View (cartoon, one colour):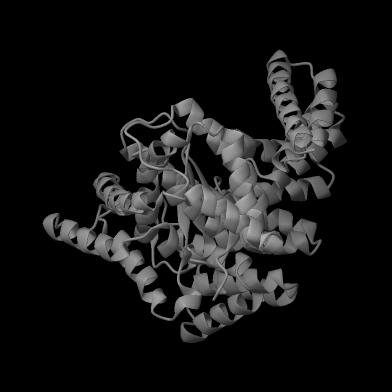
Length: 474
């Protein structure tokens, strides 16, 4: 019998066993507190892709869908998890996770929008919050601690302890499992309503669920995680099919699609975050089948660069550009390849050309900033990297190189601040605190000092809580 992935065990546990149904749910503040505890665990147990193009696209699409819903109290955040499985899930507080394996299996943005809308609906309907209500006698840290114990056990560190924990918590709770069917149908009902309001026709949700269902027939070892965390697929397919029959409509208007970026993002997901050999073989076969496919060459070039075959990668990108000379993504990827190969002047001119076509491309801005830094222009580097910060990008490496750019200018306040944010995102609280304390000493701007002071208080609270937990275990 195949062992269920640790993260799947966690999600099943949180969404079905631990939280019995109640007539009222958590407060928004409690839900956000619980979300913070879960994020700590999830971030430690799985790899979140730190890619501004992929993350930015999924977040933009998610924001477009959220906007179609009535106003909500949560600041939704979307994450792409690097794992080749069919899965997606939501946790309290508006945090939505989707896996690279599921994105790779999709045929277009309609399918991605359908899945995201369904997950948003779980949060909107407060399904998890309602089920947690009767467990409020257990505090948030304990809930998260139990989840962490299950993760460790399922990962092989303590199977017996994990089974005992799960068994004792689940005793007498099996009757509530039937409600998960109702939750799934309700999430589809609500999701389809607002999905169509966002400009999509709903067929994408039906097609992706059919793909997920089809995969289960290959055998128990490849049953998609999505079927474990989102049961009742057969019932859902029947409902969605009926809904679409009753709401016949043409495809949405051309501008309904968030950006038209899906093919580029999907190629990037497959080229950079799937198995290297699989990626190379997939794109090689794709361009052999269609030698005039620029996305095929784009993906092949990225996959080649990932293996260190720089000259072949450059050749692939140049072939993509021979087909579409004004493709900013192939130009940006070519600039990135030049950069990673230490060809900084070529990188500079190529990235500048890419940004002249698409000034908003986050990857182009990021690598242009890094190129300027390598060429000894830290002021220009900081300008480019700060642009991404102002747009809401918070990647760890972005913070690191921005700190370096400010350090080379002698701006120690901003250098220590961004290095502190880098360590904070790495969840190294001690180093983050040390850097932010130095930033507080060096910073001259009152607004920045107030922000740092607030961050230091939050870090001190977290460090105190960690110390208390350690003492309790001791």
